[in-house]
Image (cartoon, rainbow, N blue to C red; front, side, top):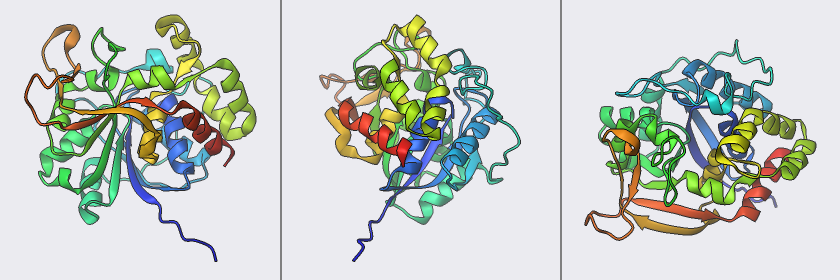
Length: 314
């Protein structure tokens, strides 16, 4: 008798670029996850490029998932991309045809609200970019937070400095007002910061070569990291390149991937200067606030690498 394994429903909100694409591959190829929708937000790239990159990646996975177009700019600040990291097209500038694919016509924020309303407590929300779409959903529908089973966020840092200013990580810095709304909400928050990626998600040249040889999907997943690899070599000085969105997705797919975590109060700073968009983790409880977030500090690297390998050969 074949055992019927029910898959966990997941909605992904992303600013699709090179590492986001690998995170999408992990989710779309996971035997335990059912991706029921993807929403795009402006972040790594302008939203039109994010939409095309998501649709291209879905095609590469031979999957069918609706892609909805969300916010084209942050709530308050002007839009600022990370094309200096991911390439002009966000996918490594390797010549992919990122045009002509048609997303679902429904507005992303409305679709997010309606989808979670229809199945309260059944769907996980995974965010891989700025939190604009989610902040808008919370602002439009006050009940939204209680409908989400888990909200796993790639953003901020638990212990390290930032990667776009001395204190702030890109996804939070890109729209700090939205991030503040999300972290101040009743969402069941889980934060996987850039510090986790640097500690446990660095891909060496040797490992990248191994992944490339696994399949056409492996070749795609590694070739689109071309600009990221150069950025990590010259700017962050890593021995390889790190994958923040995929390691976040690994925790979303399997919560037990975390090997070290704390539950603390986390607040997003909205002041001016280098600390704008900083995630302030109240490690000592100095602020006297209720602990609102599961902060992942380390992930099982061996299992993470195995998850990528399995997805690329699946």
